[in-house]
Image (cartoon, rainbow, N blue to C red; front, side, top):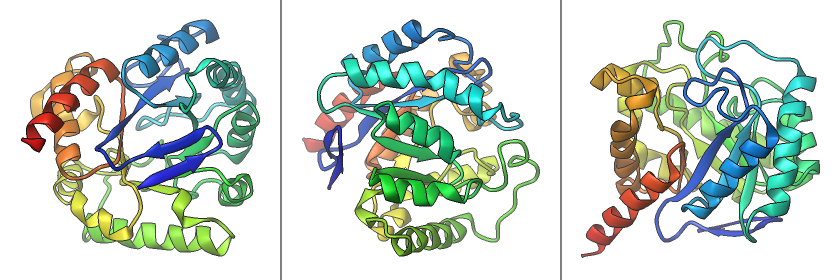
Length: 279
């Protein structure tokens, strides 16, 4: 399976590729405040590309559970210079995406060199986002989220979380195609931690195979998330082992793109895992 963007083709046939997380926010749950200035953020993005990522996902507003919105102008200010400089300096073929659910932020980032959009709301919080990515003809990650970042972890409930995911993605794909979009540009993300309990997250991870029935690449973010704390009692700073376990499981389940904080460690882990799997 090959995805196309103006940055180049992304071959997903040889195992999972890595999308490095670059949050230019003061309040993200793990790396908030680490890259307050554009030069430091750009340097980290380039380092991730040099360490095994082929994709950097830039976010300017935290979507952790309970987070508040920031003004649109502030979100654009945070990401603009970072996206523009990364797009200019990244190795050929590298993908730079914008992590936002606001169409005006996505449009600003695309104008500055981003080649893809990662919408954590899956077109749910800004009706204009679908039309924007259709008109831009860019790849888009459609993420499942129940509620909003502020409310999503307030007693989330499902009759069957996997059944609801399938219905959700089928409806979003239908909406995208009817708006004039090319289904081949869509990746799907089940949204671990976005309106899910521990049991919901585990049910999704155990049932990742079902998502392949949709025929689209699966994009997954488990890196340092709180479900690892629920299982192992680890703070965000100590969740790398659990993150690697989740990455390995996802790779064995055929996930195409892994969104991670720790690129060198995950790249090495997957290199060994995939070599053993080929034996």
